[in-house]
Amino acid sequence: MIPKIFLALVGLLYAFLAIYCSVSSEKASRTVHLTMDGAGGRSEFLTVYGGLEFAIALLFLLPLAAPQYLRAGLLSCLIIHASLVAFRTLSIVLEPSAFAETRSLAIGEWVIFLLSLFMLFGLKK
Image (cartoon, rainbow, N blue to C red; front, side, top):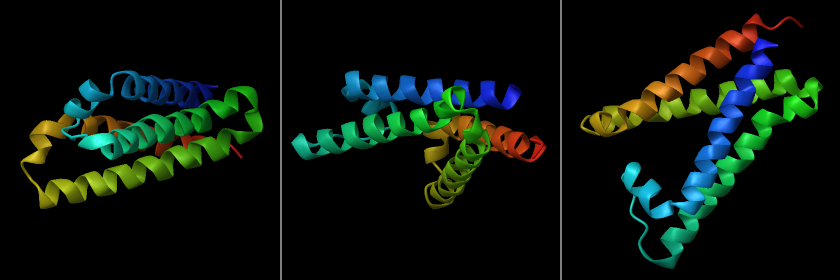
């Protein structure tokens, strides 16, 4: 039950972020220090930060409707957040001053990564 609640909360977080990035894209892009130059930049931001985050939300929410996908949802959460942690770490190594601007994102990614690791390997087969 706890792993399903965990995935639901992470899924709702991603759904909120997708909607926020779609509705308030100018503000959201400033929050993550991205510029949206021209129509192409705005389109790309909407697609990646709106569309991709919404797809991730649906992936994490899927076990609520189809419980047989719980393990796959946890594995997806682990893979996604392990990748985010790896690339965030690389970005901080390459751009050390970026940590001050992205600290809260980095902490959130680490927390979700570690919890998904714990949930996946703590789940009985």
